[in-house]
Image (cartoon, rainbow, N blue to C red; front, side, top):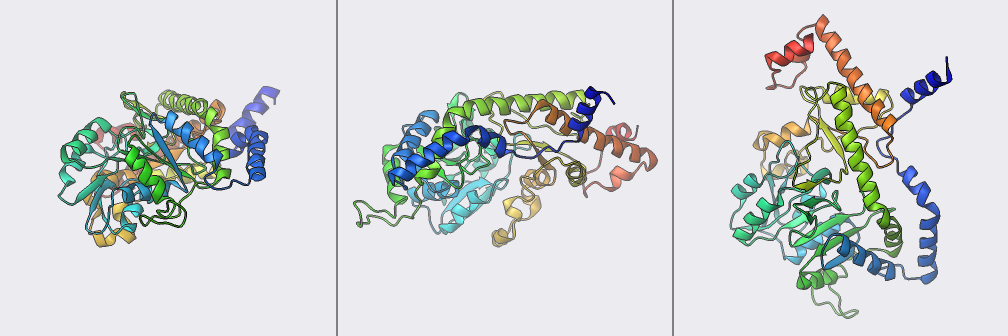
Length: 418
C-alpha cells in the first residue's frame, strides 16, 4: 500500500468527536493560566475586576448598554423573570422544544409555563402560536434562539408590544447571532446568556450574563443577584445568590477576542456540510438545517432531521463508526413527566413532537477539519446505501419501520427501492 493510500485509510477510520474542547484549550492554555494566576494573586474571587471587564465586553458585543454577570444561564432566566415579579398565577409563553432551564425558571417562581409549538424548519418558536396563547395572565414571552439562530423577532416584538408584555430572549446558544442586523440580547427587554463550556463562548464551568438597554432593569438585576442587598447587610428585596466568579470571567476574557473567528469557522463548517450532503445526494433523504436570510446564524449546533424512523438506527451506525452525535432534544418539554400536571398531549404540539423524534446533531465545533466532515457525511451516505440495498431485498422494510402515521410517499418509496 502506498503512503497516500495509508494516510487516506487512516483518516477514513479516525474517530470524529462530537465536541473537542481540547483542541481549543490547548492553544489558550498558557494565556488562561496566566489570567487565573492574576485572579489568585489579587484575591478578588467574586464580582471582581475580571467580571466588570467581561460585563463591559459583553455589553459592547451584544450592542446593549448594560450586561450583568450571574452564576449560570439558568439563573439568568430566573433573574430576568424575577425582575418582572413573575409569580404564582402568572403565565409565561415559551417553546416546548428547548432545554429544560427555560421552563424550570418559570415553574420555580410558581408561574405556569405555556408551551408553544415551533417552526419545523428553524426549530424556533412560531409567532402565530404565541399570538394565540396570550391571555390576561401572560406576564412574559421567552423566545429561545435555538442552535445559534434567532427566532422571528420582528413578529414577536409586534405581538409583545401590542399586548404590553416583556420579551425575554434566551440566547444561551446564540451569542453573536443577529436578526435583521440586530444582535441577540439587544432586541427584547432582557437577554439571557450561558457560558457553559459547550457554548460558542464557553467557560471552565457554569456562568451566565444578562443584557439590557433599560437602566432600571439593570439596577434591579444587579440587586437580585446579591440577595437584594444594598448596602451590605441591608436587603431591599428578596433576591438570590447568583454571582459570577472571577475565575470564570478571567477564562472568558481570554476567549472573548477569539469568538468571531470561532463563529466564522462554525459558519464555514455548516456551509461545507451543505455542500457535502448535496454531492452525496442526501438532500432529499435528510432535512438539513435552514438559515434564514434575515439571520446571522452562529451554529452552536448543526442539527439534521432524519425522517421515517431512521434517526436512531443512523445514530447507532455512526456510534459504531466512532462518530459523535447528540439528540437535542428527545422530548418536547410538554411531554416530560414533571410537566404532566399541565395536561398536554404529544399531538397538542405536532411539530415539536415530530421534530423531537427526528433530530440528530452532528459535530460542528470550530476546529472540525474538512476531512472529519467528509468522513461524517461518507458514513451517513453508506448507512442509507445499506438501507436501500435492504429495501431491494425486502421492498416494504422501510415502510414497516416508519413511525405510526408517517407513510412514505409512493415516489419516495420507489426511489428508496431502486
